[in-house]
Length: 469
Image (tube, rainbow, N blue to C red; front, side, top):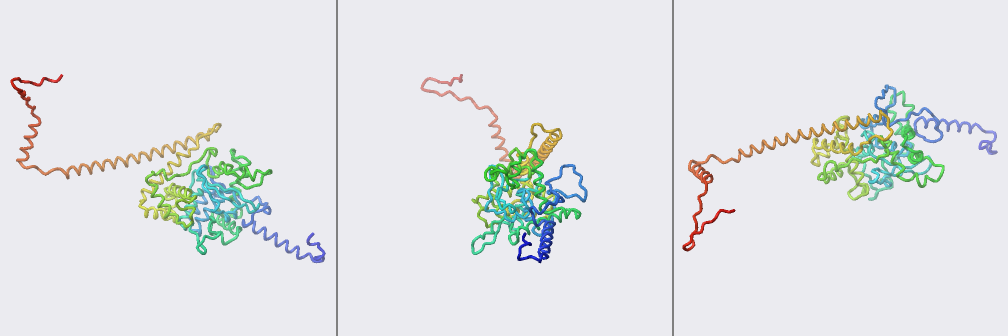
């Protein structure tokens, strides 16, 4: 109707040209992953899943899983690779659109010690609303653990040091991902898409965009038998047919089971337990506070001692230490995040060997606290998988105990050796003949029987002590 208005009669070419340019622009942005809306009706997008099932055989043309891609990103030398990893993993847990992570604001963050999760407000750009985003430790893999990702980002790039303007923190100082604040949300979506495409085979790059993360997360929740439809709506941010979006779906409890599913927990009904610094002993906690202050340099009051996000920082530190042994083996000692932890820990008086022991202690405690078990009605394969997992954990614990026993035995042997040497060094010099003679007389006197006491005489009567009864 617009082009038929009387003011434009007789000249329709401008309208056709403008429409063609608009359609071309939209299609270009869809292809680059820079737009997310109803325009995109493509069915060619590939969903990125968290982890391929064990035994899956992939060809060199297949799209890898998120665990593999985030591991490669952490090992890479890409610019802002640690911040990008944190951004992508956060988008996965939020089941969000790729550009929305730009607006993830730490002002809304809370660490819920009852539910053991981080929660915050996530902007739903398409619908101009907000929803909850919740995150917890990954059950098995450090690569997709949001707390490990945030810890590496904060430690390697001073991610918690924000620039003050006029002596005060600006409005943008509390956004989780500073690199996105100079650009639009479309730029954020584009940088996620371009990063993911660098991590997939060339033949699949056209089918992989930032939306592939949301496709994968949503697919995971859809196919999970323990995730209800209202829970799916709550996590994904879709509008319900009633007013439950303002009440039920906004409750953090609606996110717990979906969150655990996205974190790889097999039994999402069972409460999870995060890594804890208490696993290395209560006596080491003051040293851990110092390590946290030096590892995660920060000028944000919320993360300092006494701040409401300090418990989150302790969980982040426990997570980084828990994953240290695994990351050292897979990434090597020269990796920036690994080397940074070793360097700062050394400055706090923690040796490499001690750091490895702490990593083992925290990981063993985490595994023991999060044994998933088998639910009623489980199939034979699930029972066998759970049994094998428990046996593997027991073998690992036995091996660790044997190592501790060997270490203690060696220490006992060493102490006994030092004790003997000390006794020999402190023994008296050979005595003189006179001293030896006196010593023999004293020994003989001590060995001979004592003489009987003579009866005491009182007046003319003699009183002898009678033997005791």
